[in-house]
Structures are given as C-alpha cells and as structure tokens.
Image 1 (cartoon, helix red, strand yellow):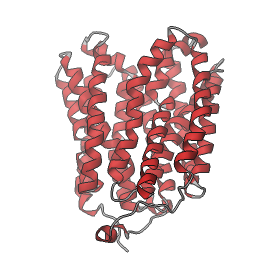
Image 2 (image 1 turned 90 degrees about the vertical axis):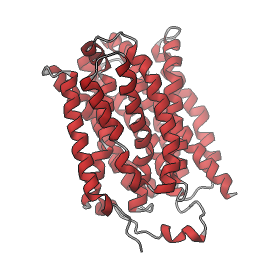
Image 3 (image 1 turned 45 degrees about the vertical axis):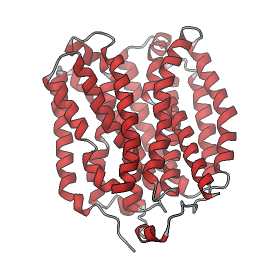
Image 4 (image 1 turned 180 degrees about the vertical axis):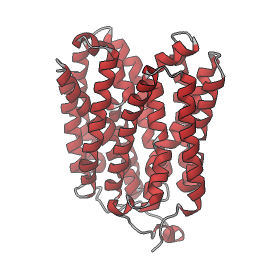
Length: 402
C-alpha cells in the first residue's frame, strides 16, 4: 500500500509538471507571432507585457502558495486545476493589450507557478530517503512536455486558429486533471510520509523552520543567489536567441537544433541528480549546480563556430537538470517539511521573478548596445561570485538536529 501510494504521488507530480508547461515560456512563446499579429504589437511591447505580468504573478504566488500547508492537497490541487483551466480559456479570448496582460498573468501564476509548486511541494513533503529520485522523476513530466508540445503545437497552428487550440487545452484539463488527481492523491494527507527504516530515522529528526525564520537566515540568501542564476540567465538566453544568432552569424536553425542537445542533457542530468542527491545529499551537490552554467558563458565569450551553440546549450541543460531537483530538495533538507509549502511558495515566486528579471535585464543591455559577449561576461561574474559565497558557507549549510 505504501509503495503504491509512493508511486501515485510521483505520478501526480509527473502529471502536474507536464501540465505546468502551458504557463512556461517555451510554450507561451509558440503563440508569440499569432498574438502580436492579432493585436498589432511589436516584439518589445510583447516582451514588456510578458515581463511585468510575470513579475506580478510572483508576488501573488508568495501569498497563495503558502495555503498548501493549511488545506488538504486534494482540495488545493483541485483549486489549482480549476484556475489553470480558466486561465487557458481566458487566454483564448485575448482581444486587447489589457486582456493580454491579464492572460499572461493568469498563465504564469497558474501554470509555471502553482502547478509546479503543487507538484514539488507535495513530493518534497512526502518523500525523505528517496526525495531526489522522486523529484527527478516528477520533473521528467516537464521535460516530456518540452520535447513533445513544440512540434505538436507548431503543426496544429498550420491547421487551426490559435484561439481554438487554447479552448481545446482548457477542455482537456477539465476532463483529465480533476479525475486523475483525485484517484492518485485522495488518500494523501498533510502528515503522510514515506516510510524509512530505523537506521535512517535519526536523519529525519530535524528542526522545522517557519518562513519568517527562513528569511532571517543568511544562508537562505546565499543559496538563493545560486538557485536564481539559472532562471534569469537561461530565460534571457531563450527569449533573445535571435539576438545570439545575429551576433554570432549562425544560421537560423542552429539554436533550434541545439535545443535537442539541451533537452537531452537536461533529462540525463535530471535522472542522475536524483540518485546523487539521495546518496550524497543536496547540500553536497549544490556547489556543482552552476559550474556548467559558468562554463557556458565562457564558451559563448570565446568561440563563434556554429558547433559552439550545441556545447553552449548542452552545458545549460546540465545545470537545468540539477537545478530542477535541487530547487526543491535543498529547502526540505535544510529547513524541514512541516512548513515547506510556505517556504517553497517564496522560492518559487523568486524563481518566477528571476525569469521576469532576465527578460527585462537582457533587453535593457541589448538596447544599450551590449554585445552577447559582454552580456555573457556580466552573467559569468554573477555566477562566479555566487559560487564563491556558497563555497565559503558550504560547511554551515546543514539542518539543525532535534
């Protein structure tokens, strides 16, 4: 029964991360041209609206996300599902810049924010000794969506109006998600936990921090500095990939083809990281998370050959695979799981904020005439400083035993 429940919780996480894709940048970006054509707006206007809506969604998430600690996960998941379905339907009704702002706000909040928050918080709370593998398996849902949906949506856009696609998505959500979620987590309580043997029991008796205590802990900010590097740098890279192509004089399909390497490396690292975390702990793996990301900035600074794009995005993919799992397991490992929903609401909001920051920051630098090499230098300096700070305090990043 317990093993069966563990499987159901992982499957629940997989499904929720898959459906979170509807609010992710890679998916919304597929409708960029259609929406701009409908509203007659420029790239810059779309980017500004996207960044500001994403920023606002991060603030709402801090308040709403903490409720996952107070009500049953089945009720919370149902509310998130209804919100996602409504958001997708509302997206199909975009007819003005105001509606576009609200639609993106809803999608970023419900999809990228609440769907992924619900999945990772549920798994982080339930699992202990196999938390790393459970999180890596659940995040494979998003990787699956990243692999399947772009090709599918591009094909469907040649056959149907973009509004019809969003209406269909909302219908699929209403039909599939409530029933599947109920069947998977109807027996899951807030105090449900993975069983562990007595040999490992001593490792579970750690202090449970409240969010107000966490934000007073200096270690939290040093870890966050490392955690947020991937969201803002990767998002900036993805949103302004056309700028990179022009700067490096690469062909129009180089970045698109390189994304295959990004996805492959991300998935491989995702699974490997789960086993490494369960064996060595998140705290010991964390220091290595952004090293590939740092190397990617060096690659883009010094090399111009088209093959560079494959190495560049491959390295980002490795850091992405590590970040997806460490972004959830680390907080539960250090601060306990009793208030993990409240803590994860804050960290997820910061991650969403970082994606908005990356879009805006890269845009400002590009408009001011910075080259891609100069932007990479700035990004690399940030990563290096955050790594040095983490290295200095790494021996102090331990949970408090009780």
